[in-house]
Length: 315
Ligand code: C5P
View 1 (cartoon, rainbow, N blue to C red):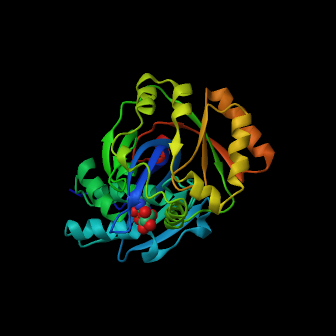
View 2: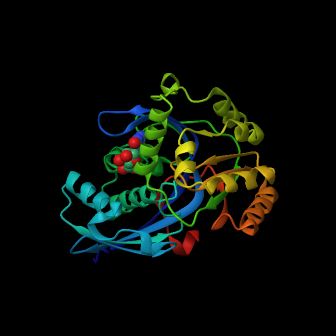
View 3: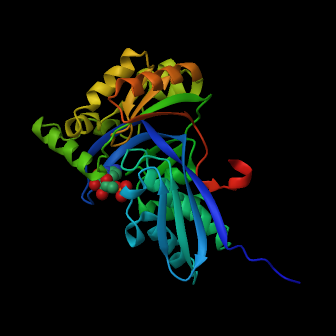
């Protein structure tokens, strides 16, 4: 009897938006204590792992030329770490197909790492739980555990400690992409600089761990208008300081009747909340026509975290 050995697995992972991001002071380890509400949204990267003699990585799709290759890519670190932790004496060639913007504040790199963990877990037959994959993810980056989990969740610590949140209904988002990315460490550093300038050493610290009551109530009731009014990100001033043209993008969405707008993570992507599918279409057209955003894309949330994907069946 012949036994067929799986040689290749594909996993898909979603982008995220931060509905709320409260940033506390800088910690001794170089991270900021934060309290955030993540939502996974329907923009996806696909990662295919193939049994190989050495670890490697190639990228195709949106902004592929801006993604680091080889050992510098988080996916290689993810696969190596998983192999090391579980005594797997095998390597993988990793192929990423990108649709999530690079350096866009939507956890594109983290999504790729999460998809790699899920794909390698299946290829190597490890049978790990989501919690176990999240624990490995936390070693790789603050947003990787959420990319594994998906849905809507509160994140504390540096963003890696997660608690799922009840979110009713589906939210219609429009994302305005920038021509230039922003580096996450640079935006956090700018936040510290602005706070020092204003003698504000992390004004929201007392709130950390207590996500905005209104925002959580809006999610529980599925009230998009209430959610729109509660969106908030402490990194907004820092992102606008590094990329002043984002102010214009925010204004256009506001003028077009978005229920709310927020810089996604450390930016520069801006998320606009629409009332329904049609409204999202109108907003996307207005943002594209204005010429201030490099591109505008619609996506709904919440969606699932990283999962196995069969291109023939699911696409
Ligand atoms: O965890 P990750 O590698 O994604 O973080 C990238 C950088 O973003 C960190 O090195 C740090 O400069 C900044 N960061 C932070 N506070 C957090 C998360 C990230 O200052 N909670």
